[in-house]
Length: 241
Image 1 (cartoon, one colour):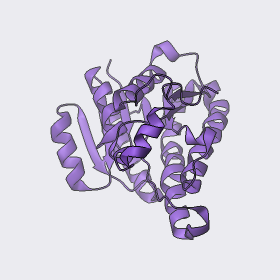
Image 2 (cartoon, rainbow, N blue to C red):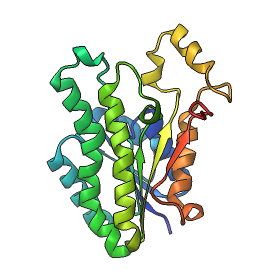
Image 3 (spheres, one colour):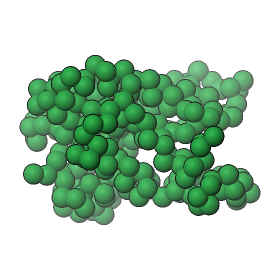
Image 4 (cartoon, rainbow, N blue to C red):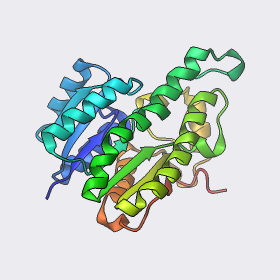
């Protein structure tokens, strides 16, 4: 039986890679984006089995509406992947309250809003997999990303707590921490900076969206049935030490 999957931030980059991986397995995949235009374009690219909805993850009412619509249409949700995220990079001494709040609201509060609206359904069916996309910066820190790092580190604690709360009802909660992945976001890094980062990766290459998608697919499946409360670092060995 195909699964019902929701991937937030699924119109491009890592999110699009995750959507494609689950669609290839025959699952029905809902995904979110920030604009109707990006949603329509992605739906056309993904093809049959993909359902897109525009949703501001920082808006609790929008998250509730999305969950209500999905559950009414599908009757259940099997896999929830919280991937949507934004950056507002600057040194902390220059960071405005707005820049802090925007990142925390989308990257940390957004997953809370969605999980809160889906968790009763998962608990009732005594099955479900929740995967939160963190980052290796949650372990290493990163200058100019105090807001982003705080949100991604917060997701790890959130993941562990939920795993303890929900494990008895058959719901697993895990995280994936991507390293340096080729996306539009990392493409903005100057060439010299990109080369410096690559030189620190033991496997000698940057990651691809497909690498993260494969990790999410594994954690969502039966092969990971005894794994919960964990974070899988997918970083080519960048944070081995």
